[in-house]
Length: 65
Image (tube, rainbow, N blue to C red):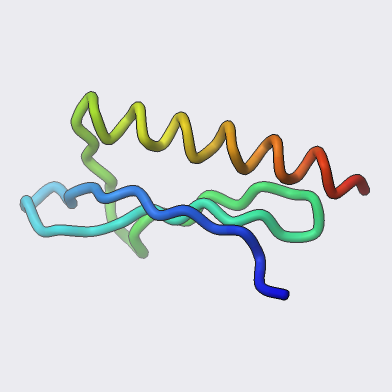
């Protein structure tokens, strides 16, 4: 079974489309930003990231340790 994951669109400092990934792996939450980049998020994208992290935390908490 693959790990639960969510994608949140963002931009890099040059305005190029990128994405942040939230992954649940063995009961831990991993936040993967664009490699070597800064993620620039709008207020709406920030809310999406918040929701993704909430879902990931709920999923990770349900997996136990």
